[in-house]
Length: 120
Image (cartoon, rainbow, N blue to C red; front, side, top):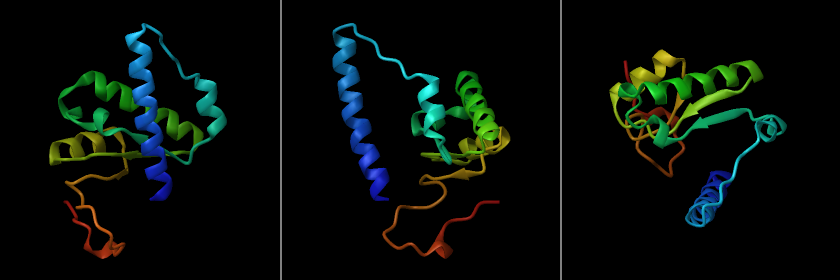
C-alpha cells in the first residue's frame, strides 16, 4: 500500500512535469528497454484504459497487447478502476484475471478478504 502511494505521488508529479513539457512542445518517451529492465511481476492496466473498455476497440487492442506482453515475460495483469459489470466482462474476455475497483470491493482499512464482493 505504501509503495502504491509513493508511486501515485510520483505519477502525479510526472504528469505535472509532462503537462509542463507539452505546453512547451517538448515530448518524452519511455523506452521499451526500460520496461524490460524492470522485469515487473505485475503490470497494471490504468483506470483510464479500463474505463469504457467494453465499447472501445482501441482500448481493447492496447490492453490485449499488454496482456500478451505480460504473459510472455511471466507477469500478471491487474486492471484498476473496474466500475461496472460490462468493464469486468470485457476484461475477463481479454484474459485479465486480477482487478480492483468499486465494482469488485469498496476501499477498506480492514484487510479481511472474506468481505470482498463476489460476482458470478
